[in-house]
Length: 196
Image 1: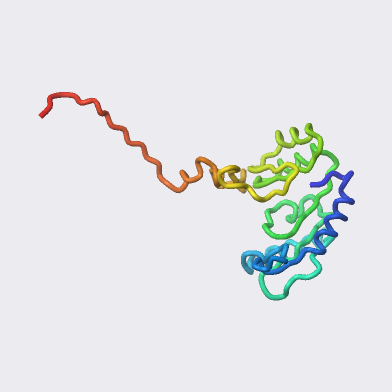
Image 2 (image 1 turned 30 degrees about the horizontal axis):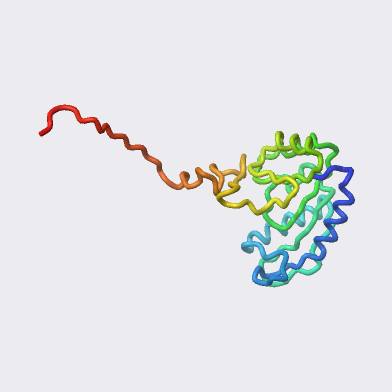
């Protein structure tokens, strides 16, 4: 979600950045974008890209993607209708869908209408804007003025809300409890009666 005042300029800058991304094996240090995890994931991303091309526009994609392997071309989708699956669903692949909004309220309303709530990112200079979004955002992890990946286990628990959540956040103090069956045993240690 990008405010209309900065939308076109941001799309142009993102297009330039995406077009030069190096797609390749994770073991190659020159790679910016590794393959997705399996063929089904690759096909899923390709279906979303095709949908974005059909109902909107692909503003940019990586210039070169290896033919062999489970690679998905990093792409930027714009001009999508509000009900587009590309905007509404969790893709888990290198497709960035950008939606133009007219206000911070409209952006928060759009996020709040989603059944998902894994991660959100906000770039803003105004502290009042940050406070507003923090108060309105239903996501499990909200990153402000930084990348939206890299939660540190033991310091910053990670997990989503709504359909993106599975319970206690990973890395948090209660995380391991979801894998066990806690039990409480109490014993009265005060002796009663005769010693035998």
